[in-house]
Image 1 (cartoon, rainbow, N blue to C red):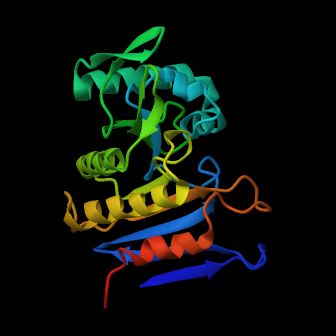
Image 2 (image 1 turned 90 degrees about the vertical axis):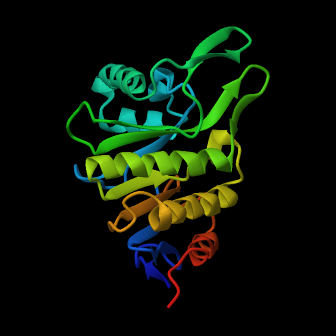
Amino acid sequence: MTSSRVSRGFVCELLTHDTSVGASEISIVAGRIEDHPAGPSATVALPCNEYFEDSCTSDTRTALGVYINRHCPEAASAFSDQIREQCRARFGSGTQQQKTMDEVSESHGPGRAILVPDPSKNAANIALVSTTTQRAGQGLAARMSYVFDGVRELFELLADQRINEVVMPVLGAGHGGIDPPLALAGLVLALAEASRYGVDRQQRKKITIVVFQRTKQDPPEIAHENFRKALELVANKT
């Protein structure tokens, strides 16, 4: 069963929708991922491309770049070093791919995930989920299958670290090219699958999806009606 909460400071807008899925709760809110409160016991899951490259941490057009520049800009270099260390530890050597016409880079593949401790010690732990490929002549491209695979790996990492709270933007939307309402519905389905059938499925998790909303005066990137519809697809039936 889904529920909604109304904020009196934002006239006629339903800001939060939530539902129970298996033993877990999925909530969808409008806002900005870098502004959403997440304590040290939570993990913020952010999208990246198959190269897990450090250029994303400085690109303020991406959720990862905005988040790092908001919370720990002085530690961006250390964070990039940790990304490389975690990729080597988890994936080993990647494969060389023609990223652009002029650049070859090491890919670890889409649908993968790593956990990187926040180097500033002030923000939540950070997970990176590769939801896009980038190839010469093709640009960035996301697929819902990458999101499903990435969420499954993310939940495996959360289980290993006994983390039960995760916050994320809509994976696959934006530069990935998936239509935002479709990306939201696909992400909710991927989370529901991991919550009901994945590892650690009996452990209750609190999952929050933050749909981009530039300011409180602007409409969110995805209409609130789609929040409700996405959650109705996966809600526990009573």
